[in-house]
Length: 118
Image 1 (spheres, helix red, strand yellow):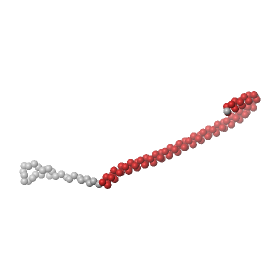
Image 2 (cartoon, one colour):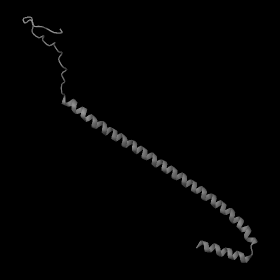
Image 3 (cartoon, one colour):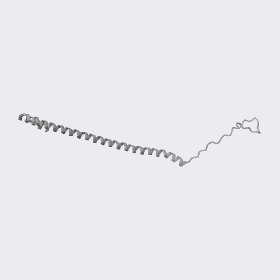
Image 4 (spheres, one colour):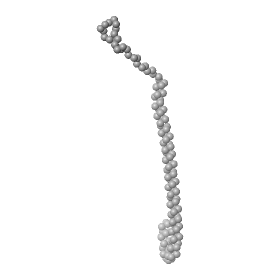
């Protein structure tokens, strides 16, 4: 129906073609409310998930720090034990050396040691 003409009137302008009706949109306030609140709900879910993940990360970091601290303490203890063992070995060597030193030199070395202790 490209251009219909009125049969009674010849020579008049053709009538416009028949158009299809437009799609009618119905407004549902409940659906709108649910749609808009969905943004807020999703945002809140993201926030709570992020906070939970941050708690996990913080906990892992604390555990890692504690582990490193324990390892450092163990290393210090081992180092002190090695020093004690080496000092015991030196003391035994010093006892042998002191027997060779004369009495006068022994008194001077004792004074130096007591001076360092105070």
